[in-house]
Image (tube, rainbow, N blue to C red; front, side, top):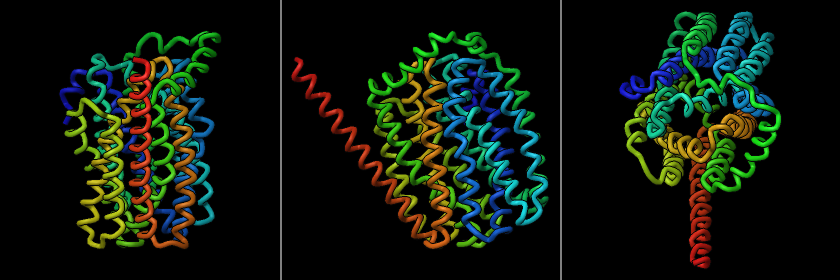
Length: 407
């Protein structure tokens, strides 16, 4: 699956495998944490709060990470953030009862701060290290495969490993994965300009240019609107995965891992379709969002476990295609020297909204039935996609009208 691309793009191949190892370790730990919280507190509120806390640092550290990525060596940023998270990954070993839950909250915040700096540096490195720019969509499709492998290898296996060996083993594994990922990245040859800081005047020029880039690109505006609106709803999905597994189907760690594994399968399968797309990527991305919403609605009505798993796969399949389309448009529309800041900005906005959404979803699970929440989330996805299609149609219609007048 995508082996030929990984062979051709050796630098990206190393970045890909570092992401897989890093991600699997983090997922091992995440599954153990969420299940442990539900068992210690018996409340979906603790799950929602923890997931929200992990996204709050993106408000400050997302833009900071973007600026650092454009100004300093991306390679060093990736290595330092990986190594610095090892100690905090191990701090979860002290959690032994309900009175220690605060350790989970603090550690989640610090780990998320590292990820907020790491994410824009990694994402803005992709277009710089690939040799063939025409392979960008295929590479972005592989990013969805990476997420799929992480979900299957980390979440699904993590649920089983946590069940058999206990959460402490997963915390040790997470720390080790950060070390291995850092060593892999250390062997990637990044472009020389990544290792040199920009001067102050150039930095100010870049900052002032980002707003101009956004105003000049309709696709960027649509994608940013999409990310913001989807983040408002996506928190419901994140909370409900664990709640469905533990409270609706009563499957515990294995259920959480099974559902995350289903999402991983869907993301991996999306590669076979996304890599063949060439045109109308923005429109296709919005259409996939609508289809994902339909599957989320169906998920809220299904009671048979096997069908629930198949629907999780289908929803993730659509999400993977849509994400690959959106990321490719985003990279093509944004000049390389501004990508770090733009990705940091988008991560900050979407993850902040996402964090608030998960917090509210966690609170809502105390008062609203999970299936009702799932139905609302799916309808919201469909509504957002309709609004984006309408906005795109209006903008393009006006653009055609202006050209006709000028002619």
